[in-house]
Length: 466
Ligand code: MN
Ligand code: MN
Image (cartoon, rainbow, N blue to C red; front, side, top):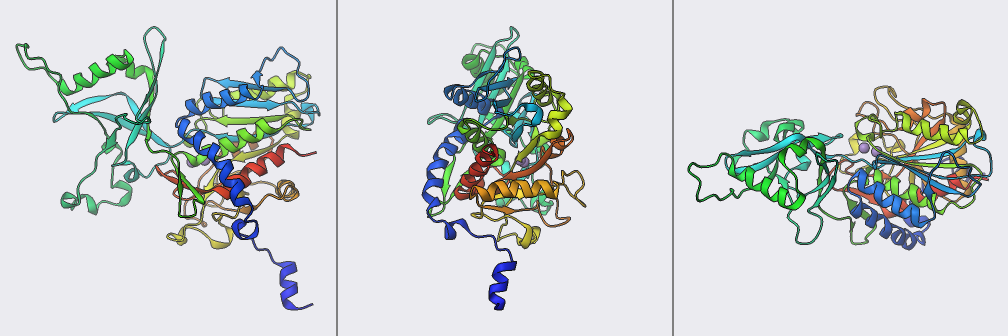
């Protein structure tokens, strides 16, 4: 045997899909049209849930009724407070033999309004914000923002806010200094280039006109904004305390590159896995094992709050499935398998130093299987077992899915976590699988269409196991 032959036999090279399977380029492009639509209509967790419910209903899903007995092939969903969603296709095997879980998150980093946000300063009206999730603050200034969210009036009526997305809508923004006057700011560390309390959103500049007033009004610009909000939504300043208002990048998902091979958009972490997981769930007809597709909330702030994965709602749902056949919950968990469907950091040729070339993921090499996350010696990670890695790799290879491995950065470069460790905490086998992303958590994140497509194929294969 020649050395070259031996090398081919013994070494591992992860191929570029565009080189090895160029026929996938067209199919991936077509698949991603639906994905871009999902991104454009789902800029918040609430909007993603309503859109997902719409798609599930259209596909024949009904609301889960714990009193009802379901048959293999039946499809149900459960909506948790409009912010997290569970969807199931009942399998042929009893749930006692385990379920197949695919969990993605649909919350993304953004600027949330504080509970008392509106103020006037030097004749401008502004909103105070508190950022949500890990953001690099300097990336969120001087970019058009749209307002999304809900306000709940005293009588309980929920008012939906959605301004800045449609043609002709006004948008909003955070200002920054001009280079002529940034001499002092330029000396700040990048981390403090823009500080948290400087992320103030411009909301208006025209004062309320009251020509007959005896004395000038205090804060007339703020009053004008409140007047317009009252006209449009019927709300008052106090209603901000009964609200969740999220400012997100106003731009739409677009193709990137002359070859249109990539998607640039806000919120791809982790709606890219949310969409692909949802499509795989809907297209699963008669699985062997019962599926539970989770679109969860609050991952970006640690999976807490009762719409996050580390709270009772997920366990209670599986418990309700187990109760249908009087199966002990712990047995269901012990026999279950999960994909933690989340993105990973793609190798960036401009910043190679934060990755370790052999163990990072790349655009166009497929979905990324991440054995462990965490930081400083895998701390805070789920570290998937070799046996489970073998099982998931086997499923993907059987289905012809292009996949690669990844780490969240070189050792001690930083790190991060996903929902995986919370699922593992229930005694379920779990590993991270998702899409490589460039500029993760930025207002404009990049993904490759081929990777999105292969992630969808991986999720489908996971549910199609015989
Ligand atoms: Mn994520
Ligand atoms: Mn994230």
